[in-house]
Length: 219
Image (tube, rainbow, N blue to C red; front, side, top):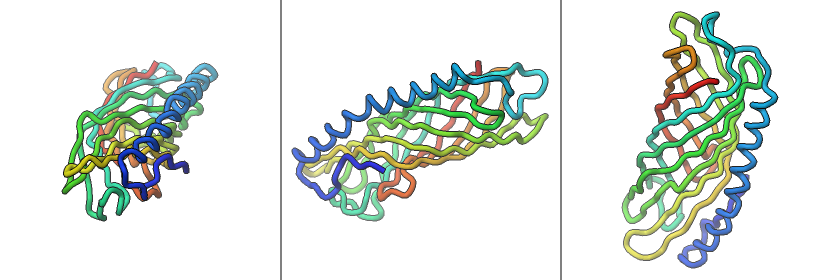
């Protein structure tokens, strides 16, 4: 678990320099995530998805997009935040994944917030988050053509936090365990829709999670 921002620092100048340092790690994280997934996609072999049935051809790679409602609850004491401070707003993102076995896939995703939200004297905006995830898929059976999945891995996220009554602000950049659960429904031989809950800061003082809806295509 890596922290690039010290929550005890209150001055705008110091915290912004901490955030800049943290953001330098983001490109290398993104490159690593996509390189891992693309490598898995190249080496993926047949085996089929767990719930396809005989009318669906085998697919080794999938990609999609989603819209979500994210919630950020900062660490207590961070820029004066208390245990009840909570900011929510809309966001969205894209993802790509590759099949490793009949029930296991490897996925990487990128997400951003569309706007900021405030609570009391604090305002927060989700700049971006990047996730590398392993995903277990469980067939719920035909004819419903639904699948339950759970996922876990690591997320690197950056949130901009500021005080609305003065110029104090900081960039919170963290890497943390991530976990989620969702359900998919097949609407055509190669297209799926899904709903999910995703926690991007498991076992952290911060709380960053989201509820989302989206779709994906399998190739």
